[in-house]
Length: 180
Image: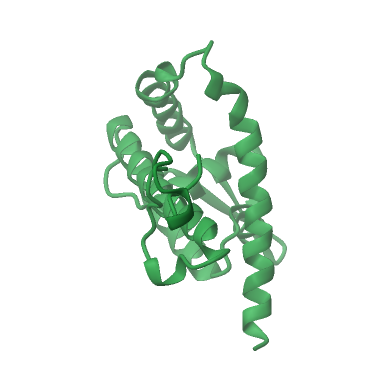
């Protein structure tokens, strides 16, 4: 549907662009601004969800990064290095992940062991049990609401691929901005 302009008076109105920064929603930047606002609200909703899901599973007071780090440390039941965790989660500031790991170790959810100069992290039995409870809450509250016949189901992989592609574009733009 076209946006109404003086030349299209009488044409049906398109929904207004919903952006967080109208001063950036100019020309070609309008589509990007609309996308960025969608990412902002989706990102915050996702972080709120994972924290509340974890609280419902039995562990309050974890931050979104703590929850993500815990899940990744548990991923495929393989020991992980700090650098690998940061790389997969696309976190540039290793101290943020390091702090989360210290919190998770103190909570008894993650353990660390030295292997030469490297420190490797793995989930403990209580960490694995918490993740199992998280999965149950996730299935009951989120996944069960996804219609198995729904048109949106086929789009999950497509949207995920698009978001990974956009991540690369933002990373490249960050490098370009750093060189200015």
